[in-house]
Image (cartoon, rainbow, N blue to C red; front, top):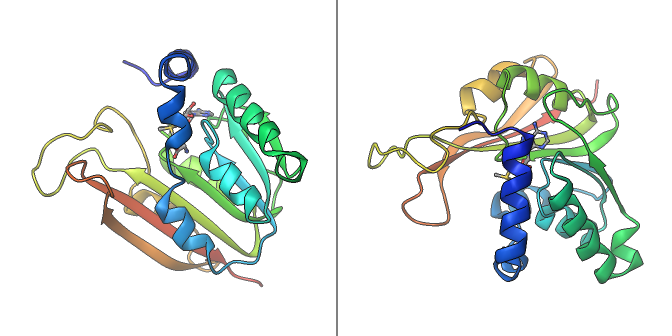
Length: 207
Ligand SMILES: C[S@@+](CC[C@H](N)C(=O)[O-])C[C@H]1O[C@@H](n2cnc3c(N)ncnc32)[C@H](O)[C@@H]1O
């Protein structure tokens, strides 16, 4: 089973049709909330924004957000949620239908770039390099990937058929002279029994 645009579009269309209530209740990502807490709001990128929980949270906390996903259904749902919250939120967000296999941010434009739980068809290193090129000097990168094997049980997780970021792939893609690593570790997921997340936070050096 591939995780291409058709797969995600069908999954989002079905999920939003059948479980819109559950989707609406999903809390924004705890790693993101923790890492953004100390940052001054500016321009942010949510790459693979899905139904927009983190994008909306960022906008509600004063960030301008560029939110990219290749699922038109997820984006339409996210946009209407933002519109319902009012212009103060909605006007801070630019929704972009784009393929993160090729989409590149404007170089050095964003104060905060995040990519949460996105499977890539190509090389993770290449995607990390491409997305991180959008981070401004002094800006922050947050990459999170659900690891395919639960280190406690040795069992495959829900991400077993996917290629998401690992600590090694993300840190290996960042030029050491240009970045300070703030976090590079595996953390247990909030929901018990679903393994660990690789969490990578890096700050681009100002010079
Ligand atoms: C597991 S969901 C995570 C969504 C959100 N970041 C979150 O943490 O809840 C992965 C998201 O990435 C999107 N996605 C996957 N591959 C993509 C690609 N190549 N280009 C753009 N979006 C992609 C999917 O449509 C989906 O919304």
